Length: 281
Image 1 (cartoon, rainbow, N blue to C red):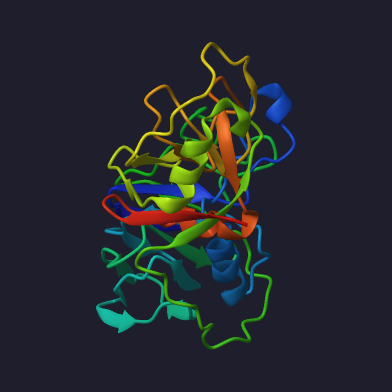
Image 2: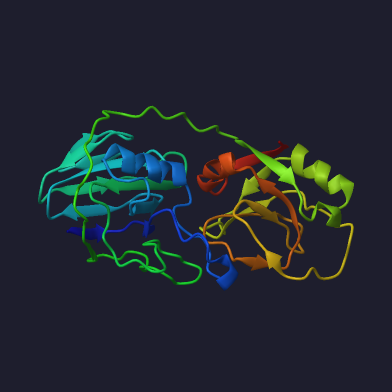
Protein backbone atom coordinates (compact mmCIF):
# COMPACT_ATOMS: atom_id res chain seq x y z
CA UNK A 1 0.00 0.00 0.00
CA UNK A 2 1.18 3.51 -0.88
CA UNK A 3 -0.18 6.56 0.92
CA UNK A 4 -0.27 9.91 -0.87
CA UNK A 5 1.06 12.43 1.64
CA UNK A 6 1.30 15.24 -0.92
CA UNK A 7 0.29 14.87 -4.59
CA UNK A 8 1.98 18.02 -5.91
CA UNK A 9 0.21 20.19 -8.52
CA UNK A 10 -1.30 17.16 -10.29
CA UNK A 11 -0.73 13.45 -9.78
CA UNK A 12 -2.65 10.76 -11.65
CA UNK A 13 -2.54 7.02 -12.18
CA UNK A 14 -1.68 6.20 -15.81
CA UNK A 15 -1.00 3.17 -17.96
CA UNK A 16 -0.93 2.97 -21.77
CA UNK A 17 -4.55 4.03 -22.14
CA UNK A 18 -7.83 2.84 -23.69
CA UNK A 19 -7.29 2.21 -27.40
CA UNK A 20 -10.17 1.08 -29.57
CA UNK A 21 -13.05 3.08 -28.07
CA UNK A 22 -12.85 6.35 -30.03
CA UNK A 23 -15.98 5.38 -32.01
CA UNK A 24 -17.83 5.46 -28.69
CA UNK A 25 -16.44 8.88 -27.79
CA UNK A 26 -13.90 7.50 -25.31
CA UNK A 27 -10.44 9.13 -25.61
CA UNK A 28 -7.31 7.01 -25.68
CA UNK A 29 -5.93 8.78 -22.59
CA UNK A 30 -3.03 7.08 -20.78
CA UNK A 31 0.45 8.43 -20.11
CA UNK A 32 1.17 11.55 -22.16
CA UNK A 33 4.84 10.57 -22.47
CA UNK A 34 4.47 6.85 -23.09
CA UNK A 35 8.16 6.00 -23.65
CA UNK A 36 8.95 7.37 -20.18
CA UNK A 37 6.26 5.23 -18.53
CA UNK A 38 7.41 2.17 -20.48
CA UNK A 39 11.00 2.74 -19.35
CA UNK A 40 9.99 3.22 -15.70
CA UNK A 41 8.13 -0.09 -15.79
CA UNK A 42 10.98 -1.98 -17.45
CA UNK A 43 13.43 -0.69 -14.86
CA UNK A 44 11.40 -2.20 -11.99
CA UNK A 45 10.61 -5.48 -13.74
CA UNK A 46 7.00 -4.70 -14.71
CA UNK A 47 5.33 -5.18 -18.06
CA UNK A 48 5.50 -1.93 -20.03
CA UNK A 49 1.75 -1.39 -19.69
CA UNK A 50 1.60 -1.53 -15.88
CA UNK A 51 -0.04 1.41 -14.14
CA UNK A 52 2.30 3.97 -12.59
CA UNK A 53 2.21 7.57 -11.43
CA UNK A 54 2.28 10.60 -13.70
CA UNK A 55 3.43 13.66 -11.72
CA UNK A 56 2.91 17.08 -13.29
CA UNK A 57 5.64 19.47 -12.09
CA UNK A 58 6.66 17.00 -9.37
CA UNK A 59 6.21 18.16 -5.77
CA UNK A 60 4.86 14.83 -4.50
CA UNK A 61 5.46 12.91 -1.28
CA UNK A 62 4.56 9.20 -0.94
CA UNK A 63 4.65 6.90 2.09
CA UNK A 64 5.36 3.25 1.28
CA UNK A 65 3.74 0.87 3.76
CA UNK A 66 5.49 -2.10 2.16
CA UNK A 67 8.89 -2.36 0.55
CA UNK A 68 9.08 -1.93 -3.22
CA UNK A 69 11.33 -0.94 -6.09
CA UNK A 70 10.67 2.33 -7.89
CA UNK A 71 12.11 4.16 -10.89
CA UNK A 72 11.51 7.78 -11.91
CA UNK A 73 11.72 8.79 -15.57
CA UNK A 74 10.63 11.68 -17.78
CA UNK A 75 11.09 15.26 -16.55
CA UNK A 76 14.21 15.17 -14.32
CA UNK A 77 13.52 15.81 -10.63
CA UNK A 78 15.48 15.66 -7.38
CA UNK A 79 14.21 12.69 -5.36
CA UNK A 80 14.91 11.24 -1.92
CA UNK A 81 14.00 7.97 -0.20
CA UNK A 82 13.98 8.35 3.58
CA UNK A 83 15.92 11.59 3.13
CA UNK A 84 18.62 9.93 1.00
CA UNK A 85 19.08 11.34 -2.53
CA UNK A 86 18.57 8.86 -5.37
CA UNK A 87 18.95 9.16 -9.13
CA UNK A 88 16.64 9.22 -12.12
CA UNK A 89 16.25 6.44 -14.71
CA UNK A 90 17.42 3.74 -12.30
CA UNK A 91 15.73 1.20 -10.00
CA UNK A 92 15.76 2.28 -6.35
CA UNK A 93 14.70 0.22 -3.34
CA UNK A 94 12.16 1.71 -0.92
CA UNK A 95 12.10 0.03 2.54
CA UNK A 96 8.71 -0.39 4.22
CA UNK A 97 7.69 2.77 6.08
CA UNK A 98 9.91 5.06 4.00
CA UNK A 99 8.88 8.42 2.61
CA UNK A 100 9.64 9.18 -1.03
CA UNK A 101 9.90 12.91 -1.76
CA UNK A 102 9.90 14.20 -5.34
CA UNK A 103 11.02 17.76 -6.10
CA UNK A 104 10.17 20.01 -9.03
CA UNK A 105 11.71 19.45 -12.48
CA UNK A 106 14.24 21.92 -13.84
CA UNK A 107 12.97 21.16 -17.35
CA UNK A 108 10.05 19.24 -18.77
CA UNK A 109 6.63 18.79 -17.19
CA UNK A 110 5.78 15.16 -16.46
CA UNK A 111 7.70 12.69 -14.31
CA UNK A 112 6.72 9.01 -14.20
CA UNK A 113 7.19 6.75 -11.21
CA UNK A 114 7.10 3.05 -11.94
CA UNK A 115 6.59 0.79 -8.91
CA UNK A 116 7.29 -2.94 -8.80
CA UNK A 117 3.99 -4.78 -9.15
CA UNK A 118 2.24 -1.73 -10.61
CA UNK A 119 -0.69 0.18 -9.13
CA UNK A 120 -3.69 -2.09 -8.68
CA UNK A 121 -6.54 0.41 -8.96
CA UNK A 122 -9.81 -0.78 -10.50
CA UNK A 123 -9.62 -0.84 -14.32
CA UNK A 124 -12.29 0.90 -16.43
CA UNK A 125 -12.71 -0.29 -20.02
CA UNK A 126 -9.50 -2.26 -19.67
CA UNK A 127 -7.35 0.61 -18.40
CA UNK A 128 -6.36 2.06 -15.02
CA UNK A 129 -5.67 5.49 -16.53
CA UNK A 130 -7.22 8.67 -15.18
CA UNK A 131 -8.91 10.52 -18.05
CA UNK A 132 -9.36 14.10 -16.89
CA UNK A 133 -11.52 15.08 -19.88
CA UNK A 134 -14.18 12.36 -19.67
CA UNK A 135 -13.82 11.51 -15.98
CA UNK A 136 -13.15 7.82 -16.63
CA UNK A 137 -10.77 5.95 -14.35
CA UNK A 138 -9.51 7.02 -10.93
CA UNK A 139 -9.69 10.73 -10.03
CA UNK A 140 -6.59 12.87 -9.64
CA UNK A 141 -4.82 11.95 -6.42
CA UNK A 142 -5.40 13.83 -3.15
CA UNK A 143 -3.63 13.81 0.24
CA UNK A 144 -4.56 10.70 2.19
CA UNK A 145 -5.33 8.54 -0.84
CA UNK A 146 -4.07 4.97 -0.58
CA UNK A 147 -3.06 2.91 -3.59
CA UNK A 148 -2.71 -0.87 -3.63
CA UNK A 149 0.19 -2.56 -5.38
CA UNK A 150 0.04 -5.67 -7.51
CA UNK A 151 2.39 -8.62 -6.98
CA UNK A 152 5.94 -8.09 -8.17
CA UNK A 153 6.64 -10.51 -11.02
CA UNK A 154 9.75 -9.40 -12.85
CA UNK A 155 13.45 -9.54 -12.14
CA UNK A 156 15.40 -6.27 -12.01
CA UNK A 157 18.43 -6.57 -14.26
CA UNK A 158 19.34 -2.96 -15.20
CA UNK A 159 21.26 -0.50 -13.00
CA UNK A 160 20.60 2.67 -14.99
CA UNK A 161 19.21 3.66 -18.40
CA UNK A 162 20.93 6.55 -20.22
CA UNK A 163 18.44 9.12 -21.50
CA UNK A 164 19.12 11.88 -24.05
CA UNK A 165 18.85 15.43 -22.71
CA UNK A 166 15.92 17.47 -24.04
CA UNK A 167 16.54 20.37 -26.43
CA UNK A 168 15.94 23.85 -25.05
CA UNK A 169 13.94 24.80 -28.17
CA UNK A 170 12.74 21.51 -29.68
CA UNK A 171 11.74 21.14 -33.32
CA UNK A 172 8.72 18.89 -33.80
CA UNK A 173 8.31 17.02 -37.06
CA UNK A 174 4.89 17.24 -38.69
CA UNK A 175 3.00 15.82 -41.65
CA UNK A 176 0.67 18.22 -43.51
CA UNK A 177 -3.07 17.73 -43.48
CA UNK A 178 -5.69 16.49 -43.39
CA UNK A 179 -7.19 20.01 -43.65
CA UNK A 180 -4.19 22.08 -44.71
CA UNK A 181 -6.20 23.11 -47.78
CA UNK A 182 -8.34 25.25 -45.44
CA UNK A 183 -5.34 27.55 -44.89
CA UNK A 184 -3.58 30.19 -46.95
CA UNK A 185 -0.23 28.94 -48.35
CA UNK A 186 1.44 31.68 -46.29
CA UNK A 187 -0.01 30.11 -43.14
CA UNK A 188 1.65 26.81 -43.91
CA UNK A 189 4.96 28.64 -44.41
CA UNK A 190 4.43 30.51 -41.13
CA UNK A 191 3.95 27.27 -39.20
CA UNK A 192 7.34 25.91 -40.28
CA UNK A 193 9.34 29.15 -40.16
CA UNK A 194 8.16 30.88 -36.96
CA UNK A 195 8.78 30.06 -33.32
CA UNK A 196 5.77 29.45 -31.07
CA UNK A 197 5.50 29.66 -27.29
CA UNK A 198 3.68 27.28 -24.95
CA UNK A 199 0.97 28.99 -22.88
CA UNK A 200 -0.10 28.36 -19.28
CA UNK A 201 -3.46 27.03 -20.52
CA UNK A 202 -1.79 23.79 -21.66
CA UNK A 203 -2.79 20.51 -19.99
CA UNK A 204 -3.27 16.79 -20.69
CA UNK A 205 -5.83 17.65 -23.39
CA UNK A 206 -3.44 19.74 -25.43
CA UNK A 207 -0.51 22.13 -25.69
CA UNK A 208 -1.80 25.63 -26.47
CA UNK A 209 0.55 27.90 -28.39
CA UNK A 210 0.96 31.64 -28.87
CA UNK A 211 2.64 33.32 -31.82
CA UNK A 212 1.71 34.40 -35.34
CA UNK A 213 -1.85 33.28 -36.18
CA UNK A 214 -2.39 30.89 -39.08
CA UNK A 215 -4.73 32.52 -41.59
CA UNK A 216 -7.47 30.49 -43.21
CA UNK A 217 -8.14 30.43 -46.93
CA UNK A 218 -11.70 29.16 -46.38
CA UNK A 219 -14.45 30.43 -44.10
CA UNK A 220 -17.45 28.55 -42.79
CA UNK A 221 -17.90 25.56 -40.54
CA UNK A 222 -16.16 22.23 -40.81
CA UNK A 223 -18.26 19.18 -39.93
CA UNK A 224 -17.05 17.40 -36.81
CA UNK A 225 -14.57 14.64 -37.62
CA UNK A 226 -12.28 12.24 -35.82
CA UNK A 227 -9.19 13.60 -34.06
CA UNK A 228 -5.88 11.86 -33.38
CA UNK A 229 -3.22 12.45 -30.76
CA UNK A 230 -0.68 14.90 -32.16
CA UNK A 231 -3.17 16.77 -34.35
CA UNK A 232 -2.50 20.51 -34.72
CA UNK A 233 -6.02 21.85 -34.54
CA UNK A 234 -6.48 25.54 -35.33
CA UNK A 235 -9.44 27.36 -33.70
CA UNK A 236 -10.79 30.69 -35.02
CA UNK A 237 -8.02 32.73 -33.33
CA UNK A 238 -5.49 31.02 -35.63
CA UNK A 239 -3.28 29.72 -32.80
CA UNK A 240 -2.63 25.96 -33.02
CA UNK A 241 -3.25 23.42 -30.27
CA UNK A 242 -1.28 20.16 -30.15
CA UNK A 243 -3.68 17.44 -29.01
CA UNK A 244 -2.34 15.18 -26.26
CA UNK A 245 -3.62 12.03 -24.54
CA UNK A 246 -6.93 13.35 -23.15
CA UNK A 247 -8.00 15.13 -26.34
CA UNK A 248 -11.64 14.78 -27.52
CA UNK A 249 -12.29 12.08 -30.08
CA UNK A 250 -13.95 14.53 -32.51
CA UNK A 251 -13.50 18.19 -33.36
CA UNK A 252 -14.90 20.85 -35.64
CA UNK A 253 -11.85 23.04 -36.27
CA UNK A 254 -9.47 22.24 -39.16
CA UNK A 255 -6.26 20.32 -38.52
CA UNK A 256 -3.38 21.83 -40.49
CA UNK A 257 -0.85 19.09 -39.63
CA UNK A 258 -0.16 16.12 -37.36
CA UNK A 259 2.97 15.43 -35.31
CA UNK A 260 4.98 12.34 -36.13
CA UNK A 261 4.43 9.67 -33.48
CA UNK A 262 8.14 9.73 -32.58
CA UNK A 263 7.88 13.38 -31.49
CA UNK A 264 4.76 13.04 -29.32
CA UNK A 265 6.85 12.42 -26.17
CA UNK A 266 8.71 15.68 -26.81
CA UNK A 267 5.41 17.57 -27.04
CA UNK A 268 4.32 15.88 -23.81
CA UNK A 269 7.18 17.56 -21.93
CA UNK A 270 6.70 21.11 -23.27
CA UNK A 271 6.24 23.55 -20.38
CA UNK A 272 4.63 27.03 -20.25
CA UNK A 273 6.95 29.72 -21.56
CA UNK A 274 9.03 27.26 -23.58
CA UNK A 275 9.50 27.87 -27.31
CA UNK A 276 8.97 25.27 -30.02
CA UNK A 277 9.37 25.03 -33.77
CA UNK A 278 7.87 22.79 -36.46
CA UNK A 279 9.46 21.05 -39.44
CA UNK A 280 7.80 19.15 -42.27
CA UNK A 281 8.90 15.53 -42.09
